[in-house]
Amino acid sequence: MGASRPNATSAANSWTVAVALVVAGVPPPARADPPAAEDGPGVAVAPVEVAVDVDRPPPELAAPPVAALGHAQELAASGRFVEAAQLFEAQWQATGDPRFLYHAAIARSRADQHALALRLLDECMRRMSAGGRPPEPVHRHLEAARARELQATVPVDLQLFEGAQAVPEATLAAARISLRKLGPAGEPVPGNSFEMVGRPANGLHLDPGRWQVDLEVPGFAPARLVAEAAPSWSLQLHRRKVVVDLRFSPERALRGGQLRLQALDHASPFALERPLAGPTTTVTLTPGVWRLQVRARRHGADMDLAIRPGQPPIDVPLARRKPVDDPQLKRAPKLMFGLFGGFVATYFTGVGLLVAAANREKRAERRDAAAHEEAGVEPGATEIDPAAAAAIEANYPAAQWHRDLEFAGDLHTAGGVIAGASIGSIATLLPLAFRARRRALVLELGLGGVLLAGGGGWLGFALGERERLLDHPELRVTAARLERTDGQRIAAALFTGLGAGLVLFSGIALLHDAADRRKRARAFATAPWAAPGLAGWSLAGRF
Image (cartoon, rainbow, N blue to C red; front, side, top):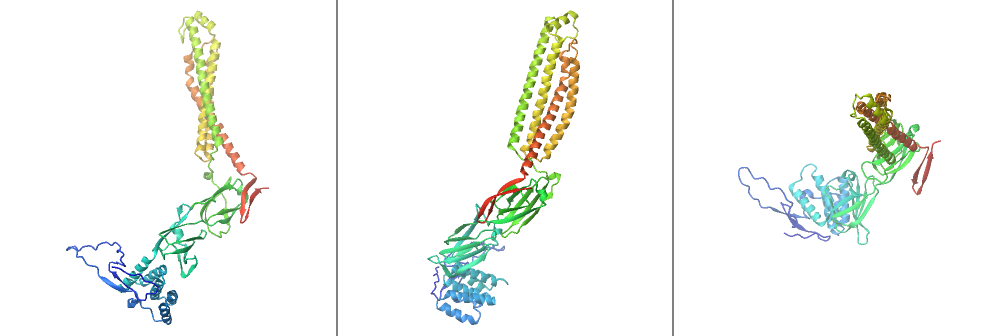
């Protein structure tokens, strides 16, 4: 089945449309087959063809008899279809009768303005269906007319991007799109333009040729696209720049303040983090939702700002932070490197002292065993006759034996303390590496003080027991007797060293953090400054 396309001079043109919506040879859309009756097989029904004449609409679509109707018909008869369409559209605006929309669509179609004709037909069908489905002849006639206009237009998918991200549909709901048909020389075609708000529900259908698209999206700079009607258009949008004044109060709470602004609903190049030098500051942002954070020594603020063009000044009240709101520790590379260096130094020093102590003690034990063997006495014997004791004393005096054991014990104790301190340095490094709150270092400092006090007392008691055994030069002590005190001495040394390491290294970390906060709260601050047509550098200070 064939069909001929209407033109600007044809006055009578008819076509045939099937109930199955076979229009001008286009295959009908797929539909679900009707369910078969439960009591028997389905019966095939052949499509019934109905003749539809474009110039002979159903009586329900006849134009109402108004004074301007005759003039509009005269304009159409003389080929001035655009003017006739404008008259019909004016009558629709005056009366609200959707039949005028149908006749305006027919006039637009004969003027080869099929995009406008399709929009008028859609509005006509929507108005006539507001109170229910229109009569079947009217519905078939409008569907056929709409199918004809769809054939004459190009479906266009308008894709809008912000960077690499598609603009959300919620943002486009308030977008204003203006479309204007252009002539061969790029001049606007009179009467062939229209506007819409939001993305069209039925898609965008335009006449073949060149079009100019002007787009206004809230929060974005106006955008324009000039292109041939094609299945896909792509347009980049850029957010407007908004200069915002921020006012902070109370002023005394700003000491050491740090301002941070970050966009939440879009990517913006204007995210910033800088110190606050005064109670007011000016920033350049983009429309959207922003997170504002202020961190001062004892005060702070957390706000979500909805920035829009023409944004008035924003007042930011600073509230005193509770203890649970202490700021997190900063991951200072130099401090962490120093703590790790302290761990390496204390660990290897402690291990070295422990190895030296073990070697010194072994040498003393071998010398004492050799003296016992020369005197014919088993090493470690408790009952020795005076002659053998005198021989042992002559070879290796008890005073020298005790001094060697005491020196080895001192090296062993020092090695245990320093090795324990290396554990304290690692324990201090962990809160910095994981950016814990500052109170973690305070807790470590307190724990270190407790361990240092308790371990130091325990170590003093263990060393006192050892010294009492070594204080009598003539009473030769055995190595087995001294070993009974080694367990307490080693454990006490480790606890003391761990406490000393926690106190030392966590104290250093806290002092560094306090110095860093004082540095950020320096009296003078500099920052770049810009205004329309101007640029410079600002210096601010407190006096």
